[in-house]
Length: 406
Image 1 (cartoon, helix red, strand yellow):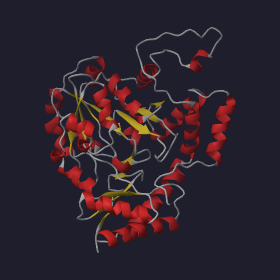
Image 2: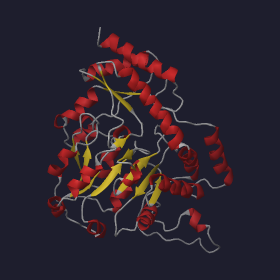
Image 3: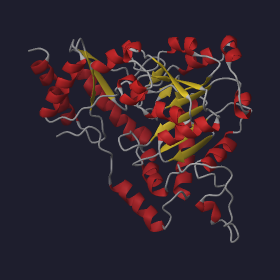
């Protein structure tokens, strides 16, 4: 069976993790700090905080900005539940929008009409690794008419003076938009290093701060670091920096979101080879699939490059023309029977019980539902060679022949 997305665990990863464990420092420490520095260099942003998940990173950012009960946060209906869950955890209301039919990303043409005096944040999601249209989003939120609607309720909101743009870039580390890396595209960007991501630390994530003046991004980093360590003003590493440095204070009732050095050890190895090795390999897999399916009139190829942006090649979201949800599910079953693991990214949020209960209706998001009904995600991982890619392609084509073209 060809797996869907196994992590790349080789001798370099094992050696660095082993070195971390033998060092005696396994929680947040020097490797985590080094990883944060390398991520800043990679994304060219001023400050990056590593955390234990992208979900935690999104929530820390929302809480730093003071998002809470009575507030609204605009998100796409087509995303993983974490994007909405963090809004709900803060007591705010997710305002869902439909998506573009070709890219799966949030339909920016719908944003302005959904902005109200309660809107505090927009969370675009870079589905499959393709950046959302950030220039258009900023054009909307900085328009005088929209800015007049913004109602600040705390010092950070008054300082920004507009809606916060918080990117859910769980898929898009290494993507480019108008030549800029993902971590430079908006106020705050959050990455995921989950086991199935391009770069993995088993579990983990990072918050890339790129707030405009007069914000000091290093100070925001420090605040969120404290907030993510139970409000403690010194972490374990800082407490070792001097004989009498053991004493700490709790500045606020915080959370527990810090990354460990064992996780960071994986990230250090992965990031060093990410741009010139990992991304190139994933791009080759995408190109192999593109070449095979390009002359199949029943296949709708995913967009991985446009004149404005280049994907991180995270998920190959193939769509099958003119089929319904039940047929797509039958195709997936048949592909599995042929020895290939595939997936679906994602079930639109209004299809899920938790969001149905809150009153969201899939009928309000026809594009999201239409895209979902015919989408099949194909395997993409480092060790997927040309022969295995051919096997994947042939399994999809054979399944289509058996289920749809019979």
